[in-house]
Image 1 (cartoon, chains in turn cyan, brown):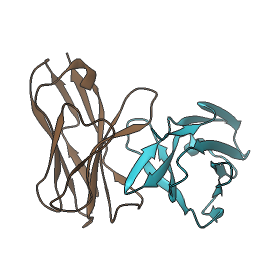
Image 2 (cartoon, helix red, strand yellow; image 1 turned 120 degrees about the horizontal axis):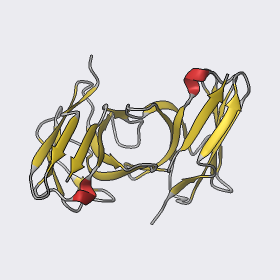
Image 3 (spheres, chains in turn red, purple; image 1 turned 60 degrees about the horizontal axis):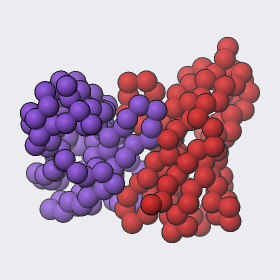
Length: 110
Length: 112
């Protein structure tokens, strides 16, 4: 079946640095991609999304890049803060269903 | 505006017992979903309801049933619980399919 995977299960960064979290997807028919943040004991929370007709989208301190040629998605967090520590999931959506990757745990060191 | 509300938050069952997880959303969303999350893994789709009156299987539907009671409510039933169903269950909703999901806070279920 199709799957969405993350390159690294864990990422540790210094407070104030930029973070880059990567994701590879395999379903070329997917047309909508989403990044979620999950804090301990809570449900995932939407961060940013991008549709397949775009290759970049910016939010507040976050940027998502989509490379359809190599089926790669990345989340960039600028000036990472302690509150950014969480598990980050990418998800691809096709035919109304979202498929999640296994997640990357981001730890921000003070 | 509570968003997506799940009950209960915690539940312990014995093998073979049955139970229903409740989910309600107050955002007037059309689509609702049930996911399970196992340790160190992403979320896997159990069942979803694209609109009121319809339900469809997801990736891991075996051992579960669902009911879209009305536009607000989508319940998940375990008829005969098994230890393999020990997991954290999340309900989610979206305005339409292929839109961002809004999640509840989860139900931690343990089957002994």
